[in-house]
Every structure is written in C-alpha cells, then in structure tokens.
Length: 296
Length: 319
Image 1 (cartoon, each protein chain N blue to C red):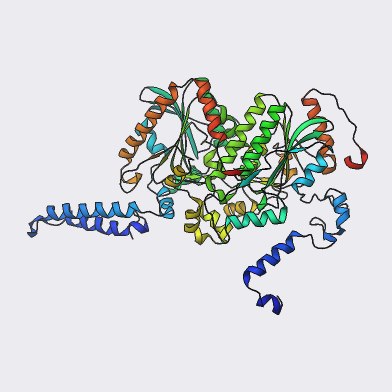
Image 2: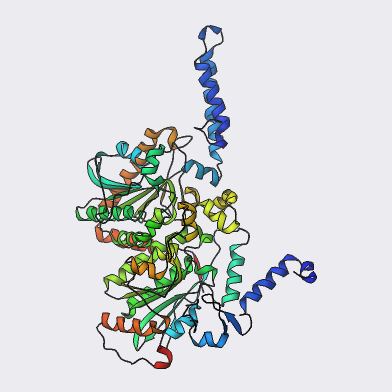
C-alpha cells in the first residue's frame, strides 16, 4: 500500500479495489491450471479453455449461453426479476450492498440467466449461472428464474438445459434460499411428467444446495473436465474427518468413477453432444451439422 | 454451573437448587418450610417466564440443541402405538441417524421418519450425532414410497445439525440422495406432515421436510446453514454465531412471519425437555388435527396444493 492509499478513507479504497476486479487486468492472464501466460483474446476465442493444458476456466453466464445457443432468435426469461433484501441481512457488509456490487461487476441482476432459443435448430430453454454474482448462490430470484424457465419449457414443449456454477444456497436470504431447492426440484417433476428432457451440466464449481437439488436431477448429467462437484465443501469435510482427502476428490472424474454423472464433456464438444442427446430424446432428426469453427 | 441448565438459565438453576435444599431440610427447625418452598417455586416460575419471554435467537438455538431435548425416539412411544422400526436402504446400509417405521396415531396407520441423535457417547456415535449419510435419505425415500403404496400419511421429525460432511457420504452421492427426496416428496401421493422438533439443519433437514403442513416447536430452529457455519464464512469467525443466528432468522417466530412454516407448536415452560410428556401431548393434538384435515382432501387436490406451496417460495421484485 502506498502513502496515497493510506490517506484515502476506507469507503473509497474498497470501491477502488472492486472496480479493479471488474475489469480484466490487461490483455494477458495466467491459466489457473498450468500457469501459462495467455493472451486474453486467445482465451476468449477458445471459450475460456486454456489452449496449452485444456483447463476449463470459469465463463460468464451470457458468454456460456451465447456459444451454446444458435445465433439469432433468443428471448430472456425472468429478466425483470430483481432480488430484495427482505431479511435486512448484514454481516461485514449489507446484503443490499453485496447485490449492487455484484450487479456492477457482472452486469447481471442475479446469478442465473435464462434464455429461450435453439441448439442446432432444436427449440430449447437454457439457463446458466453467473458465478461472479455472489458465487452463483441461489436465492429467490435464481429459484424463480429457474422455475419460470422450466415453465417456459413446458409451455413450448421443448427441453430444458441448465449450466450450474454455484457455491450453493444464498445465506443472505436465510431459509427462503433453502426452500429454493424444494421449489426448483418440484418444478422438474412437471417436466418429467411431460416427458421433456432436462439436461444438467455441472461446471466448476457445483456445490451445496444447487448440487443437492436440480443439478443432480438431470435426465442426463454432464460435467466439464475437472469441475469441483459435491455437497459439502472440501475444507468442511477436511475439518470434520481430520484426514487428507483422496486425490481428485469431488472432481468430475471422481464423480464419473463413482457413478454419479453420465459423462464428462469438453466445452468445445458441449453444444454438439447436447444437441445429439436432445434430438434423440425428443425423437427428432438432427437438423444441422456441426460448424467446425465453433464446434471443435 | 448446573449442566442441566444453559448459561442464560443459571439464575433459575440457583433458585431450583435452593428449593431442593429446603426440601431436605429438617422440618423441626421451626420455619414453615412448605410456605417457603411454595414461595420460591412461584418465584422460579416467574423467573423462568420472564427469561423465556425474551430469548435471543442464539439462546433458542442452544435450547434446540439442549442435551436433554427430546429426540424422535422419545416422541415415538408417546405419540404412536404399534411402532415397528424398518431398517436399511436396500442399496448400501442402514443409517442410524434416520429412523423410520410404521406405527399408528390413534388408530390410523402412519409412516414415521425422523432424524435421531444419541444421548450418551456410544449412542451418539451409533447415530452419527444425528447427521445422516446418503443411506439415511434413501431409507427415508424407501419408506415414503411404501407409505404411498399402502395409503399411509407420512409424519417426519426434523432434528439434525445437517448432512454428514464425510468422504464416504460424498462418494455415495449425498447430493443426489437429498435431491431425489425433494423430487419425490413434491409429488408423493399421500399427505406429509413435518415437524421441526430440534435443529433443522440445511439440506439434511429439508431432505425429509417437503410437506403439506410444516409444524415447528417453539424453541426449534430451522436454517439454511448453522449460525457457526454462517459466522465463519461471512464474519470469518465462528465466535460471531449469535450475530449470525440473529441475521438468519432461524426461530419459529421469524419463520412463521416469513410464511415458511405453517404452525408453531408451543412448548412447556422452560422448553420441551422440562416436560416431555406434556410436550408430546401438545404435539400429538397438532398432528391429529392436521392429519384429519389433510386426509379428508382428495389426493389430487392435496398434490396440487403442495405444488402450489412449493411454487410460491421466494421474495423478489418483478418489474
């Protein structure tokens, strides 16, 4: 900290640091997997997968949906919903302030974005978590958007896909956030009754209340390579059992080995894999061929 | 310090000790001991009333975890007859942290499922401190299906710190086990009544807590995360648990106000553990009344009503 920072009142200082985080630092960034220094444009072009080690970095909700859905006709579901601080929750920071900070850094109003569009010409409702928004935590708005997404699937007779990236329930909404687990799971029963597929994609990380509700209820469950997936966090488990955790514990590969998920799919193959599955599950022909530029 | 009393109850404990001492005093001492005892008893009663009239959420959560608090198997013989415990998930094992079985409430056959904590060290270990593993949820699920098939209402008792955070639990699909229960309970074709009798700890509680009517004992708690867990994440210190308890709104009163539970079941003065029989009687009449209402509903209406209940959870702005 230099002499000037020391002079600043704390409020201005904290604002300064959050603003810094909001903008990617320059044109270069380091891969968390292999430590290679990569050109930002190169990462962006590669769907945030490291070209050297194939590490799947976290990716924003809109970017995720943008590469997943066909270009063109898309409409947002539940975009007008906004979170409220109904408990007047305050820890070191007010929930209200956390919300507005998260909105500023991510440009989103909450941690889930739901779009109706198509994949390879197949109509679909797709949801994606914005991990940058309070750790992708699930509160009332996430639960409601998810449920409205499912209802849009039902109304349109089209499948539902969700890309999860979440630390779990949002503590700042108290028990109401826990109830979102029940609400979202209940919504899926209607999808099941209508024989509409739900594909759940688990990305890094999918933990807690999100993992213990809709994320594990996919007709097909797909994970991205090395994604951390589980109920209790590794640190909590370590503290409870007081032993070191096995190698690769709670990683996608670990879950596949234990029969918890159907497959691990590389981000570049996600769109075509899901399109193929959905086409088969809804008894439709495959309408389009993968375009090499975006699919591989 | 008297271990039967919590720290905020110590003034009551002192008074009770005085009463106890007087009872054994030689009556030939000339003082009218009986009058004195009656006077002190009344004083103790008033003191208890005044302390319990203004409990903080943190004090309530201590009561919810009181070592003498009645557990599921303390209620079962007081509420039901002909209880037969059923074991195992048919897949892996039998989880002692969740008990389940078939019993009768009055004459009506019901399925009973509840978390179970242990009283002494050996039983605590056997019950894994009331923290279920996937086997527990899957056993519960099996009993729910059984209840549906044989047209028995399900009554669940919630009392857990939460799901067990262990390696094996994760390996065997803790998340899926909880999620599956939420999914199945949402459409189970038989009435479900849940009662939070002690601690309602997060996903481990909710996994047997999707229902048509949610009862909560006066000094029980129900929370998305334990106050300690919340404090250590948000305040970076577990010592701030009392503040976290306040912020999270975990008491029956707060949750009723938020419309997340349906009914508060009042406890005897000083808490359920001060008079377990009385507590069971109060709980029994609440169960009986609600069972009467719910079993009279056509099953389709009941299921539609449950879906609607689940659909409306959440507070947000829509503009």
